[in-house]
Image 1 (cartoon, rainbow, N blue to C red):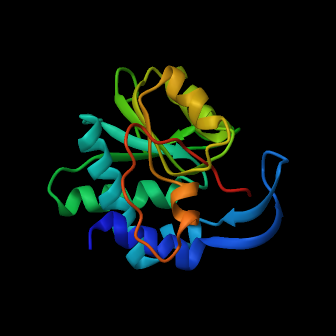
Image 2 (cartoon, helix red, strand yellow):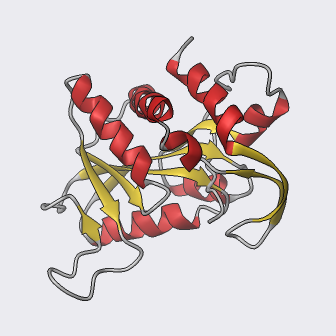
Length: 201
């Protein structure tokens, strides 16, 4: 099985929760994607890192650094940079705080010292409205970064991915629909760019 197929199996087994939920967007849903149950699992982290790097290869993008908004992006970033080191093509990681610190160096972006002119990929676990991804993008651009790729692990296809794709080079590893449609079958790559989604928190 490929890393993508293994990751799909883990997301289905660990992260898809059925029931009545209110998402971060305020919308209600009969399922919830708790991706951190997969991205913080040792095997899940390994496959997440490989899948992000494989998708960047498909997109033809070689960023200087990869990062996203805490905390949904944190395990995705960590997994990716570790796998990049194992594959001997290291990529710097960074994390974006919701707000800049009010003490010390008063930084909003952690882990990347020189930001001006850096080509970066912004990642997140799930995208619904795209709000958290856009926050991370805005912070990176304020610091002089060029956003060359935007990736989410799962796209709920509820409008956020369309907004991101309209302005950025956006893809997702999975859509929620393909993970939910037939949970007994491995996820297959769908034609064309996929969207993005963010878990409620």
